[in-house]
Image 1 (cartoon, rainbow, N blue to C red):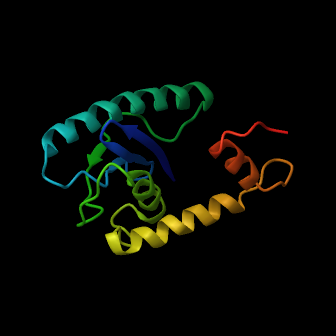
Image 2: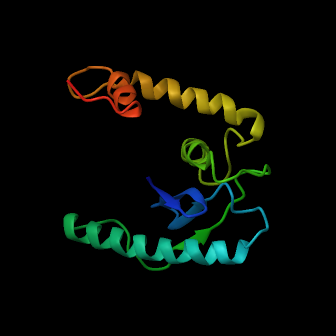
Length: 152
């Protein structure tokens, strides 16, 4: 079982993944391997992961009497999820791509500048196909919010 937490940071979006079977926490950061302040970036993620990890297991222990693992001895991993350089703009799409494509060891579909635009279009298409609890497409609501129009 895997549990993902998307996070937004000053430098852009990333995702933390709790792999419950391996007791690993991969940090999926599209800007993580760019060499610029890599050590600081890892420390920032370590701090955030530690706080979320503690809160997550507090919830597990509160709501599940016999949760199958403890919070101790979890390994943090910083896998390289791309060879391309991305800027802050667009990291939200990179983060969604990483959540969908990271299998615990590697990216099943690489994150590259070439496939970024295709994936961005796919995400937009899927958002416009979403339905609300009444089976109405949310696209009308999304457009209304985007153009700051009052609701019905």
